[in-house]
Length: 452
Ligand SMILES: CC(=O)SCCNC(=O)CCNC(=O)[C@H](O)C(C)(C)COP(=O)(O)OP(=O)(O)OC[C@H]1O[C@@H](n2cnc3c(N)ncnc32)[C@H](O)[C@@H]1OP(=O)(O)O
Ligand SMILES: O=C([O-])CC(=O)C(=O)O
Image (cartoon, rainbow, N blue to C red; front, side, top):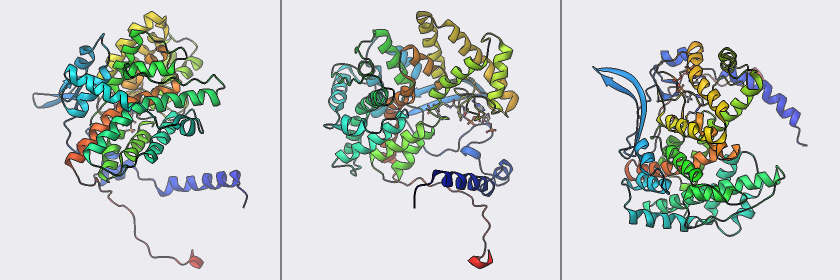
């Protein structure tokens, strides 16, 4: 039979409406059965699914026995992430230093860091013709998909793919950490050339450069970048590296690891989670949403007009009609996300240098107005504030990083956290993760075809 797109379309339209009815489980039914939607209670507390010593997130403080919302804090292996970022300010290789900390639990000495950088540099290597045969094939603006495809294909070049011994897993993780920037940046160049009709250039990474420097070198036609640009990108990578075991992509890592899967499959699953617009994919959505706002709102300084647009977003009447203000809200944080605070600081500094004050003023206004508008239209229990994805895209745009690479940059950093969690899961749990779903299905007797 010939392929018939129209037939598929009309069948799916009719049956999607059926699914909508058959599969509906109301919020009241969740409440009545004592099941927490999204595995979080009404105050935003997640169901505790495991123990970790990799990082810690704080969004509330106990005062006189009361849980009080506070500005968010994040620690990696005991160190406040803001102290870590300040610690390497003005220096190179923050990413490498913090990757060592997350993977091995301690800050490296100078010698340990030097050795680790050498290990990462030697692993920054793709199999022969991999760029031509895999990355350049079927290029797409969806770089997260091309990244996932590349990661899965790398498995075919590994003779020990199924060996889940710690040494082998660590080796695979370090290789993927090193290769990820090449897979993503070359994927962008393939798309830019074959789809956007621009020139194609593939620059090889340099062994003596840091991960952040290599990303900029591989991305730019002339391989040039300033020290400040490399430092801002380095700090951005560190801020995205890790966020506990419960975030969607890290939990995916732990779930797939617990099934005994190989490293490539685990990282591919984590990438598939991260690209979601409610998770890491929000950084692209924020920038697209802001572009839409600039088209729809005639006076960007008019608070009422901006508020009206934000209201339309929530009422599914503007932008992608999903009812979300991207870059706002968080499953854990209440008053603020510490990473968004740091990003805002970078934005402020860069916006002055790049003459983007007007954009900065608009972002700041939305950061202030969005929580009010969301609280007006939704039931808020723990407060809503700007998250890490709100300002990150703005920073990347000032570094001339193309939009398509925003979520892949998140992935280049978060793969360190995923690796640390994969290792922690392997070292400790050795038990398949398998939560329960309470069934509300009603049993029925089989009905023969001629009686339906
Ligand atoms: C790296 C990261 O993953 S950071 C998050 C990036 N994601 C985004 O920026 C997308 C926009 N934000 C969101 O979708 C949400 O805030 C999430 C998914 C991050 C967290 O959602 P929740 O855990 O449900 O947050 P919370 O419990 O505070 O939400 C309370 C209510 O406000 C709504 N809400 C929260 N944030 C938003 C938002 N930005 N836009 C519209 N509604 C929102 C929630 O949908 C929820 O309503 P519901 O009970 O009717 O479902
Ligand atoms: O913790 C979360 O749910 C999402 C998040 O901010 C992250 O993964 O960085």
